[in-house]
Length: 243
Image (cartoon, rainbow, N blue to C red):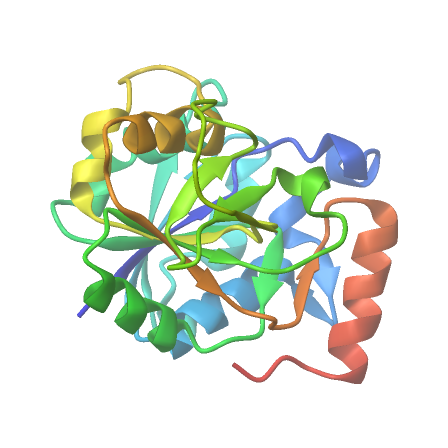
């Protein structure tokens, strides 16, 4: 049973400036609560009991607000980054806290209305090094298109690897939720800043590692821009997610 997760929360949130000059993006209020609180509830509801949160920009405010995680039913530990390491570098730095077992990674600025346990079950049965939640979306290219074959195997992400593929592929967007086996760390450089989607996933695909897509049409929201923050606030206030 997968019981450990990481939330990526170190970024500067530049598209939300000047709001993020004073408050880190994961603490932006959404329906009366910090966005990060909604994410932690989602993880706890899916059977997660240990969470690692990486920190950099205004990270002391996150640590002060969230604490040890007890009020969320979680044990929370923090991975500080003296310099921002991007998604892949941040996960690699947290390896000692994540340990040698499968784990979930969630973005600290987005939320899916689905049952996390179903994603974890699909990962356990799929036998893959990683499982990515993916959604159909007309603007998938904005987020980096994830291309799946007919059997829901991931074959390309944002055009990488660029080797020819001889089967039809279906495009999806990636809403920032994935599950990993610990051998993912074998494809990560230590002490470096890099993107997990632009570097780690292509490296795994080139090596022939199986990666599955978990296709969902679940509602999804993000707070990446002021307009999206306002929309997320209105959406959750009017119709709360019920994973």
